[in-house]
Image 1 (spheres, rainbow, N blue to C red):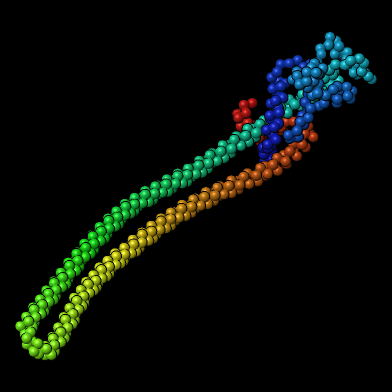
Image 2: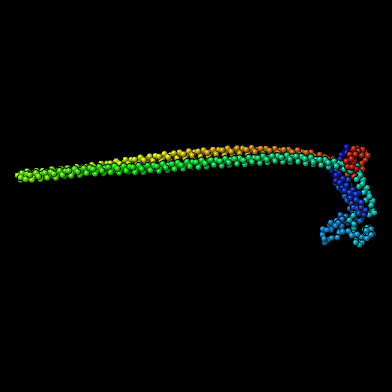
Length: 488
């Protein structure tokens, strides 16, 4: 069972290097002098050594093959035009190479020595080269190499299958994540479109409300203007009525004054007529008295003293009558003046009372209009405040609803993100566990390979380059499968 265990990853590099050697040496048909120096390979995994030319013949007689190859290559010569052709191989005449080779076998080097970039063994080196070629041939044709090739092919196929499966898983996960991101992006765009529509609706509602308020304000302004014009018309009518009343009152007062003046004139005329009648009566009396005096001259003469006394009495009576007449006339004038004054004062008082009453009524009307205007303004302010409060309340409700929707969307997005992260974390953990199992299996496989390497090293030390019959019998099925798969 130990012999049936595959040799591990190092076999892939061994098979690859063997194929390179076959392609370089077996596929190319070149002469022996143009071949590369022999490469001696041991069975250590991932290592191979090329036998340097210094180990053949005199130490230091041959230059470094790699350096000589680099110097002879045209690619390296083209790097610096100043050294073009200095490191190239110059062909020497026939026989010169053999002479130089023979001269190298002595104690020193005479003359200029030229070397080829390709190693050519000397006669004393041919047995070692032949042994190395035979060992390489045996190793190349070994059944273990075939099993190594089978292991490499199977490992490559398994690795390719794992990588393909991993790529499929990654593509599926990437596709799922892309679909989720696209869903969230579509939800975000739908939410932004809904928010934009809500903004447009709110803006249209605000514009409509502004338009309605403007119409209401215009109607209120027109109503106030009409009310103002109505008040102005009422004030004009009131002022016109007041002016007409004042003019009518003045006309009435003028009529009363004229009537009073006419009454006074009539009284004065009557008094003048009475005074004239009294004067005529007095003149008549005087005439009568004179006639009577003339008639009674004789009697007067007779009774002069009686007549004189009578005259004095008459004069006193006349003076008393004149005084009484004057007193009566003065009393009449005083009465007329008092009547006129009383009538004027009463008219003035009535006019003043009427004006005060009208002014009081006007003030009461204006005060009532001001109170009605204040009540209307208070009602309008209250209505405006109520509408503003309703708008603020509606805006607050809209903002709260919007915030709730945003919070719900954010919570949904956060939940989806957490779910995606948890899913990705679970997948990463599963992948890590799987990779840990693969690493553990690889480590176990590596440990087995190390054990096999130790066995191979022991076999190499014993120059075991082929399978035994027992090993070949044990690995017959593997060799058959390897032959079918590898095609050798």
